[in-house]
Length: 204
Image (cartoon, rainbow, N blue to C red; front, side, top):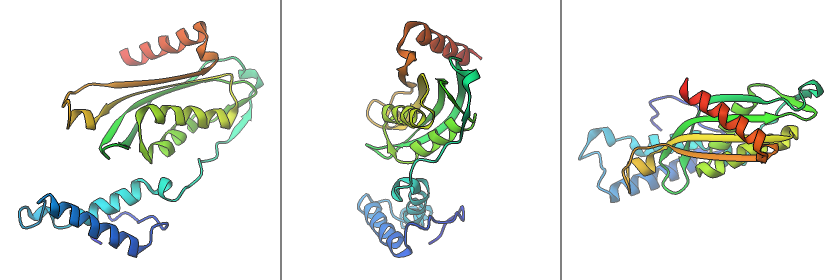
């Protein structure tokens, strides 16, 4: 199949299945009159879209487990506020298969275990590579971190642009914010600390 990016197709999808998917995509485009005879640049669109979706959704298609996160004893960090902010992410709306993208702010309060600073980004990328809802994506990241290090609390905030809102329906440009607070972050003092942290991040 033509592929302008020359990306390696995920091994979990057989070539006959990719061909079947591309034929179905071409039939869909034809039904919508999005055909090469009307625009030459649509000649390989069916194959390119199929390859892109197969690549992007590969972890979900293959039922790959959540990536393992390395932990380390961190009793000296117990009760501290640890945050990783402005993590870029992109995903695809489960209702329209349109993109949504933005930044994530993830904080946790360790108990006995700590995690590497790259762990939240890894879990975010994994959870985003399925047809998603922004609210569920935030919850998925929080759950994965809970399972990895059993912290005293976890807070996840996603701030994103939703193309299904901007390109269809309301056709309004804006930001959608989804926040999950678990454990000690449901307490007033910790919740205020997290939102004060968010305020500093958004004003930088």
